[in-house]
Length: 237
Image 1: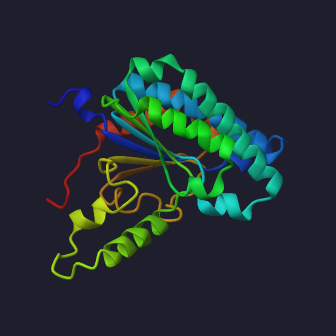
Image 2: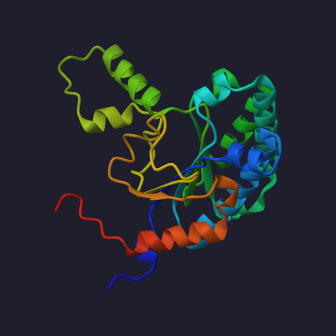
């Protein structure tokens, strides 16, 4: 029988749905739900490290989150990002565990210079680490990612080179990431959104948490990983 370590997924992706509903249920402002969600992110990163997960992807925002929500909520969300990533720069565990931190999406088009400066610093200070990977998906859409990859391939003007799965992958924003083994969505709605990591999660095991994201703490994450450990992976066999 395989041991527990072997049943830990290599790449876990999390869709943190329900911050605003959590806040509304408590009579709080929407951004207070995002603040609570940021604290949960910290717990999940700690749990992932403890459990030996090599790659963790956290969806911070879609493009629609930034374009369609009220400006006061967007400003509050960007402020949370700034404070959180500033703390990440000083977090000793990131360096002790040699965690490479990636920021994937169109965040450079949407974020203010002060926030981008902090993100660039995090990228620079962790770019040589190879033991673990932490991905923040910001202004990210899986549908957009695939379309951009196809546009890149089209612009390469090389009709003799076949379009293969490998070629598409190497043109995605997520080109360097391993396939997603386990995708978790909170908020009680059992579906994907905006094609999140659609290419990379083609064979992922799915897990849906009934409560909202601020209730998905480290203990709940461990329960989800326990469920993953019980499942078999047949890949069509």
